[in-house]
Image (cartoon, rainbow, N blue to C red; front, side, top):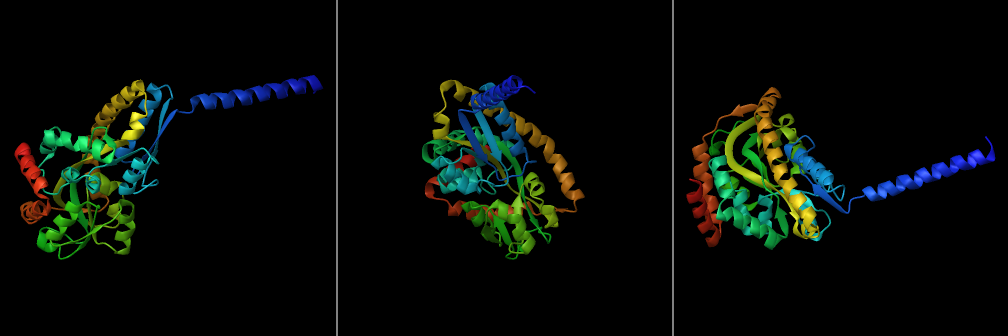
Length: 329
């Protein structure tokens, strides 16, 4: 190869390298969002956030991008809220754990409060539901982007639980949410607040004996490997808020705010569709994996737990509780 040819090839390679670097720089997003998820990649929440990320990146021409981190890789649930407020990360999903920051959030995750999903939708769309959303923005500094239905929560264990008397001080993991602790203590168990990412190993080691979650979370976490019975307590109908830091949202120019919020609406619709499709499938999968479904005395659980929760509330929250019961009956 002659000197001129070699020189020409080197020049072309250098130009290609510069061009590649230049194109990478132009594709770098101006607004990068990092989301912390407590669930694994096969959960509907994770899939919904990935869908949302694709929408905002495509519609903003690459000016916005979302990175989604599953299985509490970035932070545990409550810590994720603190990191969002500090501007370290940007997004997550939460609800009842926000009670640690604003008392009214207790109603988004309260055992024995709602009888079905119709009541849940009534509460979310009521004036109380709107107040909950305002307080998330004003008091906590996070913006709700809609809501994801979680499904009924049920108790898993290694002995059948048909009545509160069967609990017999069983050590049960609960989220770090006060009403959970109050309810399960009143029912006769020993509730132990614990991060979700620690539950599987704690069940495996016998540190705790039971846990409670919706069907999808039970499946997603692989609890059928360490728990035999799925007791159909249906003690809680709840939802989760996809969240973004308010400061992070307000940094967006107006055109990107519109794209962001429109994509959030589509994310909620998308998640709801795949949630409904997944809900019936996952029950059969859990049974196929060996879990035994146990019918329980729901009235006994309700009677023992509801009064204790009501009495644990502040006078202001007791009045709101009464209003919710009227709205959702």
